[in-house]
Amino acid sequence: MAVDNFKLQILSRAKLEVDEAADYYESKSKGVGKLFYLEFKSYRKTLENIPFFEEKYNTVRTLPLKKFPYTIHFKVDENKKTVFILAVTSNYQDPNTTRIK
Image 1 (tube, rainbow, N blue to C red):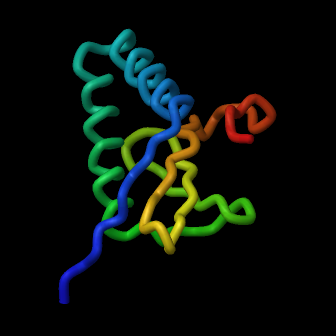
Image 2 (image 1 turned 90 degrees about the vertical axis):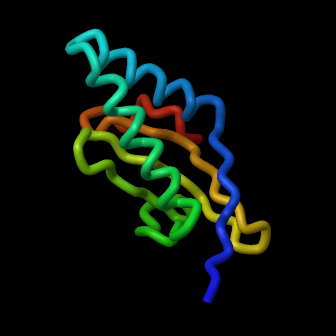
């Protein structure tokens, strides 16, 4: 049985958050920013195949990264077969300052 992949759309603010996190880790230790980006990229692939993770905030689902303290926040449109990545936030971030609206 073939799996129909979902399309992935990453909001510009989520892209910015990924870039900021990768830059932060790279500034702390050479190569760690790249590791962060590679982990995020592998989780994107997971969402393209199996996006039905915990629904945490009404219709927003979450998927925590394993090696870094960040969580991907996303919505799934089953009719359009699309996953929308809304934000990638630090687990230590004040929830009142998140870019998710």
